[in-house]
Image (cartoon, one colour):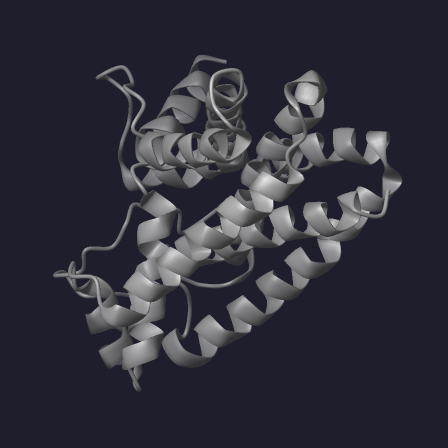
Length: 260
């Protein structure tokens, strides 16, 4: 049990800005094993974002509450996945070879492709969540929506680790901390924590199960695309998939909500 707690804090330390005990392992092996808790991090980020939304909705208009909740999610993760998304769009938008793409992705400066794409992404999230989220009296459904889209997005992303290979980068890389190997415990943990919030939504309405279709399409084609150009994935690639999966979940929930 003590080992599992340490692995959980390892995941928390790498994937959020939440302070952790100073004696937590931060080596590559610990990070690989901590991937079993990657989806659980989605519970924490989603729960914190919901809390900010819920409290803010009593003081401000719902649209302002949504903006504050998005800001809370970015703050608690340090824009970890958003940065990866912008880097990937910059890299694939401006590079024509593997090395060019990787070089652009390593550049800390934000290019036009990345700036425009991250602006559109955040605007899309804001508009969709503003239309989707219910009034404070339905807080339990709002909570499930927040937690499920964060956990499912992380599960979709980590699936690429489970089925593809890491694209080696040189020593000058600014690569993010990333899991590169796994076992059955990592797969079970990622799926358990990723699917449980969705199961509760399915209990509310069975049609939520169909979110698996667009998420699988995203996973499959992203994996093929990265393997075609990079012969594998990088940390930025996983961040990009996570952000796209978040948008897919929110838009799917919004579309479903209009017909149930």
